[in-house]
Image (cartoon, rainbow, N blue to C red; front, side, top):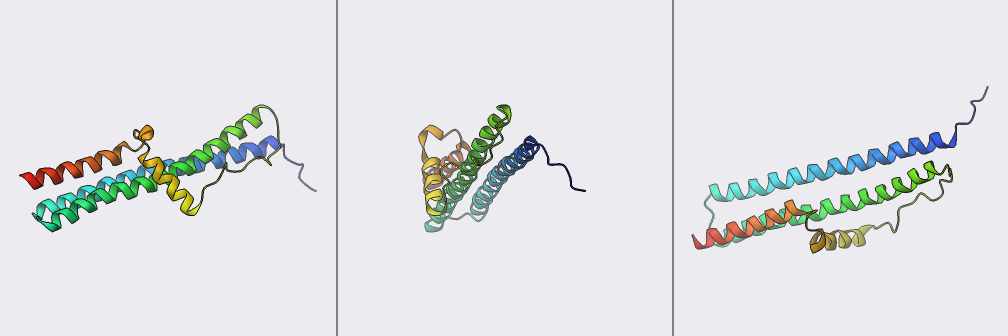
Length: 155
C-alpha cells in the first residue's frame, strides 16, 4: 500500500528548482527596485522644477533626490547578497547531483548575514569602487542630482 521511496536525486532536482525560483524572485525584485528608484527620483525633480523651487527648499529637494538612489541602491544590494547566497547553494547542489552525492546536510548559506551586519555589508558593497558597474544606475542618478543642483544654483 505504501509508495516506493523516491530516488534521492529527485529530491535534489526539486530543491534545485526551488533555489532557481528564489534566484529569479530576487532578480525580479532588483528590477522593480531600479524602476521605482527612477520613478521616484524623476518625480521628485520634475515636481521641484515645475514648482520653481529655490533657496533652502532647492537644497532639500536635491538632498531628497540624492537620498532616493542611495537608499534604494543599498536596498538593492541586500537582495543581491541574498541572490549570491542562493547561487552558491545552487552551485554546490549541481556539483552534488553531477557527482551522485546525495548528502543534503551541506546545504546552508555561507556566513549568512543578518540585521545590522547585512545593512553594513550592503552599504560597503554599494560604495565599493570595484563594484561601481553593478550600481551604475544609482550612481548616475546621484551624479545627475548634483549636476542639476550646480546648474540650478549658477543659472
